[in-house]
Length: 259
Image (tube, rainbow, N blue to C red):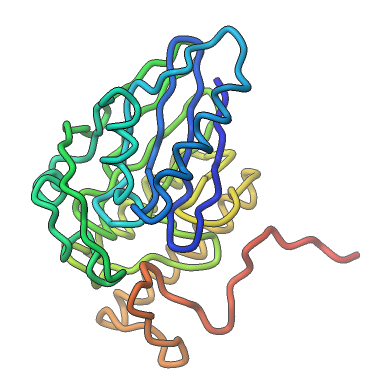
């Protein structure tokens, strides 16, 4: 099994392509702004694969938020109407084109009406030489779901971990601060080698992954102790921000020890 991260463009999420011997899956679609480009990128990767299927079996979404889901309808139509899956908590938002809970209105965009099928905790999607396992991890939103690839000891985290250096927000529609902490603790128990966050580079190496998880968990635990407030030195989130911006900045990459 091969996992390819297509880096997010502007506000887009990373788009993940899982390539197996028996099929292929897209995880997250980005916004509708670059949906045609995303299609070209996906097909370009598949064209490199020899003796493997060139079609997409399904699209899995980590949440209803527009940077993850906005381009899903277009990709599905262009890929032989392959099914789009999202946690049941997010289905009505996509199928009604709700621009409020998807946050599309904050991007001055409409949310394309997107017909979906449900994906639930512990659902498994086999791809021949590997599988993708769904794990329901709410917090940023009630429909938050991450995708675990056991063969790679890898997790695609969506908005639960938007970036290594930036913690998620819980003060958006259907967000819940205690759920964020519980979900991150559950991720920590997986003892992962790699996390692919919403945006930015993959978080690699068990020690680096654990360091990032501990930093995020400690921050949110402190927020609970402070009655849900963030440090006064941190900037107010921008209109489109799905995360908070620490001050002073948290490290994005693993720190190298200086001897």
